[in-house]
Image (cartoon, rainbow, N blue to C red; front, top):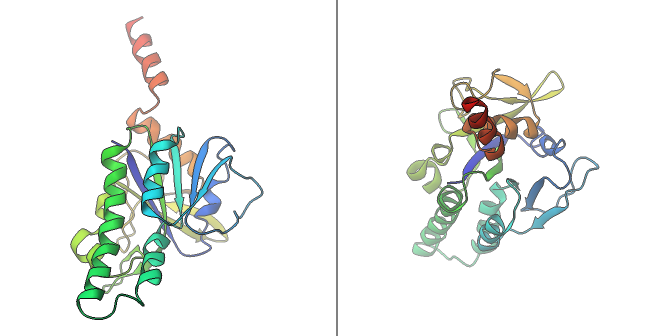
Length: 222
Protein backbone atom coordinates (compact mmCIF):
# COMPACT_ATOMS: atom_id res chain seq x y z
CA UNK A 1 0.00 0.00 0.00
CA UNK A 2 1.65 3.20 -1.19
CA UNK A 3 1.38 6.51 0.67
CA UNK A 4 -0.09 9.54 -1.11
CA UNK A 5 0.83 12.91 0.40
CA UNK A 6 -0.79 16.17 -0.64
CA UNK A 7 1.12 19.46 -0.66
CA UNK A 8 -1.04 22.54 -1.26
CA UNK A 9 -0.13 26.20 -1.56
CA UNK A 10 -0.46 29.35 -3.59
CA UNK A 11 1.64 29.85 -6.70
CA UNK A 12 5.11 30.95 -5.57
CA UNK A 13 4.68 29.62 -2.03
CA UNK A 14 7.60 27.19 -2.44
CA UNK A 15 6.00 23.85 -3.32
CA UNK A 16 8.51 22.91 -6.02
CA UNK A 17 11.35 24.65 -4.21
CA UNK A 18 10.85 22.18 -1.36
CA UNK A 19 12.46 19.46 -3.54
CA UNK A 20 15.85 21.18 -3.47
CA UNK A 21 17.52 18.98 -0.82
CA UNK A 22 16.86 15.61 -2.44
CA UNK A 23 19.95 14.12 -4.09
CA UNK A 24 19.90 14.21 -7.88
CA UNK A 25 19.49 10.43 -8.09
CA UNK A 26 17.15 10.06 -5.11
CA UNK A 27 13.85 11.43 -6.42
CA UNK A 28 11.59 10.56 -9.33
CA UNK A 29 10.00 13.74 -10.65
CA UNK A 30 6.88 13.65 -12.83
CA UNK A 31 6.27 17.06 -14.39
CA UNK A 32 2.71 17.68 -15.52
CA UNK A 33 3.83 21.03 -16.95
CA UNK A 34 7.12 21.69 -18.66
CA UNK A 35 8.27 24.39 -16.28
CA UNK A 36 11.97 24.54 -15.34
CA UNK A 37 12.84 23.94 -11.70
CA UNK A 38 13.31 27.01 -9.47
CA UNK A 39 16.84 25.89 -8.50
CA UNK A 40 19.97 24.74 -10.36
CA UNK A 41 19.81 21.04 -9.46
CA UNK A 42 18.44 18.65 -12.08
CA UNK A 43 17.09 15.24 -11.12
CA UNK A 44 18.33 12.27 -13.11
CA UNK A 45 14.88 10.66 -13.20
CA UNK A 46 12.43 13.16 -14.68
CA UNK A 47 9.38 12.48 -16.81
CA UNK A 48 6.95 14.97 -18.34
CA UNK A 49 3.35 13.98 -19.06
CA UNK A 50 -0.25 14.93 -18.35
CA UNK A 51 -1.58 11.52 -19.35
CA UNK A 52 -3.04 9.56 -16.44
CA UNK A 53 -2.08 6.15 -17.83
CA UNK A 54 1.49 7.28 -18.42
CA UNK A 55 1.68 8.60 -14.86
CA UNK A 56 0.38 5.30 -13.45
CA UNK A 57 2.89 3.28 -15.49
CA UNK A 58 5.73 5.55 -14.35
CA UNK A 59 4.75 5.13 -10.70
CA UNK A 60 5.08 1.37 -11.00
CA UNK A 61 8.13 1.29 -13.24
CA UNK A 62 10.43 3.55 -11.22
CA UNK A 63 12.58 2.04 -8.48
CA UNK A 64 12.68 5.37 -6.64
CA UNK A 65 10.89 5.39 -3.32
CA UNK A 66 10.13 9.13 -3.28
CA UNK A 67 8.02 10.35 -6.21
CA UNK A 68 6.72 13.85 -6.85
CA UNK A 69 3.89 14.70 -9.23
CA UNK A 70 4.58 18.40 -9.66
CA UNK A 71 1.61 20.58 -10.63
CA UNK A 72 -0.64 17.55 -10.12
CA UNK A 73 -3.71 19.77 -10.24
CA UNK A 74 -3.01 20.42 -13.92
CA UNK A 75 -3.89 16.81 -14.65
CA UNK A 76 -7.42 18.02 -13.91
CA UNK A 77 -7.04 21.40 -15.64
CA UNK A 78 -5.43 20.01 -18.79
CA UNK A 79 -8.09 17.33 -19.12
CA UNK A 80 -10.77 20.00 -18.90
CA UNK A 81 -9.09 22.42 -21.33
CA UNK A 82 -8.46 19.71 -23.93
CA UNK A 83 -12.02 18.41 -23.90
CA UNK A 84 -14.51 21.08 -22.83
CA UNK A 85 -14.92 22.61 -26.32
CA UNK A 86 -15.91 19.26 -27.82
CA UNK A 87 -18.07 18.16 -24.91
CA UNK A 88 -21.08 20.05 -26.20
CA UNK A 89 -23.91 20.72 -23.75
CA UNK A 90 -26.09 18.81 -21.35
CA UNK A 91 -25.05 15.19 -20.98
CA UNK A 92 -21.74 15.81 -22.76
CA UNK A 93 -20.64 18.36 -20.15
CA UNK A 94 -21.89 16.13 -17.32
CA UNK A 95 -19.87 13.23 -18.72
CA UNK A 96 -16.74 15.37 -18.97
CA UNK A 97 -16.95 16.44 -15.33
CA UNK A 98 -17.49 12.83 -14.30
CA UNK A 99 -14.36 11.81 -16.24
CA UNK A 100 -12.36 14.58 -14.59
CA UNK A 101 -13.36 13.41 -11.13
CA UNK A 102 -13.06 9.70 -11.90
CA UNK A 103 -9.55 9.83 -13.33
CA UNK A 104 -7.99 11.83 -10.51
CA UNK A 105 -9.74 9.69 -7.89
CA UNK A 106 -8.53 6.56 -9.67
CA UNK A 107 -4.94 7.84 -9.65
CA UNK A 108 -4.96 8.40 -5.89
CA UNK A 109 -6.58 4.99 -5.39
CA UNK A 110 -3.89 3.47 -7.62
CA UNK A 111 -1.16 4.87 -5.37
CA UNK A 112 -2.87 3.53 -2.27
CA UNK A 113 -3.76 0.07 -3.56
CA UNK A 114 -1.18 -0.82 -6.21
CA UNK A 115 2.17 0.60 -5.05
CA UNK A 116 4.44 -0.99 -2.42
CA UNK A 117 4.28 0.43 1.09
CA UNK A 118 7.67 2.15 0.91
CA UNK A 119 6.76 4.33 -2.07
CA UNK A 120 5.59 7.82 -1.14
CA UNK A 121 3.93 9.90 -3.86
CA UNK A 122 3.69 13.65 -3.32
CA UNK A 123 0.85 15.45 -5.12
CA UNK A 124 1.76 19.14 -5.52
CA UNK A 125 -1.42 21.20 -5.94
CA UNK A 126 -2.58 24.80 -5.86
CA UNK A 127 -4.99 25.89 -3.16
CA UNK A 128 -8.29 27.75 -3.24
CA UNK A 129 -11.04 28.76 -0.82
CA UNK A 130 -14.36 26.94 -0.84
CA UNK A 131 -17.78 28.53 -0.34
CA UNK A 132 -17.37 28.74 3.43
CA UNK A 133 -13.86 30.18 3.28
CA UNK A 134 -11.82 27.06 4.05
CA UNK A 135 -8.58 26.54 2.11
CA UNK A 136 -8.59 23.32 0.07
CA UNK A 137 -6.86 21.83 -3.02
CA UNK A 138 -7.92 23.53 -6.24
CA UNK A 139 -10.05 21.31 -8.49
CA UNK A 140 -12.62 21.64 -11.28
CA UNK A 141 -16.24 20.54 -10.97
CA UNK A 142 -18.25 19.44 -7.95
CA UNK A 143 -17.61 15.69 -8.08
CA UNK A 144 -14.19 15.77 -6.38
CA UNK A 145 -15.31 18.38 -3.85
CA UNK A 146 -18.79 17.22 -2.92
CA UNK A 147 -18.80 13.49 -3.62
CA UNK A 148 -15.18 12.50 -3.02
CA UNK A 149 -13.71 15.15 -0.67
CA UNK A 150 -10.28 14.78 -2.25
CA UNK A 151 -8.24 15.70 0.82
CA UNK A 152 -10.06 12.94 2.71
CA UNK A 153 -8.14 10.39 0.63
CA UNK A 154 -4.88 11.64 2.15
CA UNK A 155 -3.68 11.05 5.72
CA UNK A 156 -1.03 13.77 5.29
CA UNK A 157 -1.84 17.19 3.83
CA UNK A 158 0.77 19.92 4.26
CA UNK A 159 0.25 23.55 3.36
CA UNK A 160 3.09 25.56 1.86
CA UNK A 161 3.06 29.19 3.04
CA UNK A 162 5.25 32.27 3.28
CA UNK A 163 5.99 33.57 6.77
CA UNK A 164 8.00 36.81 6.94
CA UNK A 165 9.71 36.08 3.58
CA UNK A 166 10.46 32.50 4.69
CA UNK A 167 8.85 29.52 2.98
CA UNK A 168 7.37 27.05 5.48
CA UNK A 169 5.19 23.96 5.69
CA UNK A 170 2.18 24.04 8.00
CA UNK A 171 1.66 20.60 9.55
CA UNK A 172 -1.48 21.35 11.57
CA UNK A 173 -4.70 23.03 10.54
CA UNK A 174 -5.40 26.63 11.47
CA UNK A 175 -9.06 25.72 11.60
CA UNK A 176 -9.62 27.25 8.17
CA UNK A 177 -7.70 24.83 5.99
CA UNK A 178 -7.40 21.08 5.36
CA UNK A 179 -3.86 20.69 6.70
CA UNK A 180 -3.34 17.50 8.73
CA UNK A 181 -0.78 14.90 9.76
CA UNK A 182 -0.72 11.87 12.10
CA UNK A 183 -0.19 12.59 15.79
CA UNK A 184 3.51 12.87 16.59
CA UNK A 185 4.79 12.69 13.01
CA UNK A 186 6.07 16.27 13.06
CA UNK A 187 7.34 18.06 16.16
CA UNK A 188 6.29 21.57 15.16
CA UNK A 189 3.16 23.07 13.64
CA UNK A 190 5.40 25.05 11.27
CA UNK A 191 8.65 23.85 9.69
CA UNK A 192 11.04 24.72 6.87
CA UNK A 193 9.62 23.73 3.48
CA UNK A 194 12.13 20.93 2.98
CA UNK A 195 10.41 17.90 1.43
CA UNK A 196 13.46 15.74 2.12
CA UNK A 197 12.97 16.31 5.86
CA UNK A 198 9.27 15.53 5.46
CA UNK A 199 10.06 12.33 3.56
CA UNK A 200 12.49 11.20 6.26
CA UNK A 201 9.94 11.91 9.00
CA UNK A 202 7.23 9.90 7.23
CA UNK A 203 9.53 6.91 6.70
CA UNK A 204 10.65 6.95 10.32
CA UNK A 205 7.08 7.28 11.59
CA UNK A 206 5.81 4.32 9.55
CA UNK A 207 9.12 2.40 9.82
CA UNK A 208 9.44 2.15 6.05
CA UNK A 209 13.22 1.82 6.06
CA UNK A 210 13.43 -1.96 6.23
CA UNK A 211 17.17 -2.03 6.89
CA UNK A 212 16.86 0.26 9.90
CA UNK A 213 13.86 -1.67 11.19
CA UNK A 214 15.81 -4.94 10.96
CA UNK A 215 18.72 -3.37 12.83
CA UNK A 216 16.34 -2.28 15.60
CA UNK A 217 15.00 -5.85 15.91
CA UNK A 218 18.53 -7.25 16.01
CA UNK A 219 19.60 -4.75 18.67
CA UNK A 220 16.55 -5.66 20.72
CA UNK A 221 17.56 -9.33 20.79
CA UNK A 222 21.13 -8.63 21.87
